[in-house]
Image (cartoon, rainbow, N blue to C red):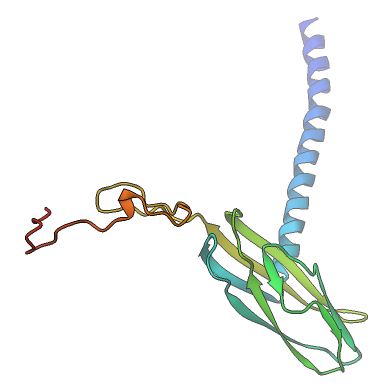
Length: 177
């Protein structure tokens, strides 16, 4: 009887394991396909690491409209947190286009941002470009006394901490350590 129960249990487990392994293999296959599609870009524009609210940085994106094509269209046309100086136009074949790619004012969007844009002609893909940037928070700055010097609005009024210290080295006001 024990042998029969063991065999029944084994026949119940084996198909379950086969289904589980098939599901894992399918999941891994889908992930590798997604990775392959991301790496098939013609160009990568990497803005590196930027601080939140830093001044916008621009980099060029150049491409040539191939023969038989007379227009281009960039999708998506608003790849946040990036901006494009142009999103499409009618051009002649062989025309060279120079577009400016910029990281927008990035307040609050800390993290790694990667967007893939595609430049299409009227009947074919011209170029696939990956835009990358890492946005980090503004590091706090500490004053000489160790207090945090984060910028705070004061409505144009000076507080006692905004006033310059009295005395300096060699002055009658006293020396500060």
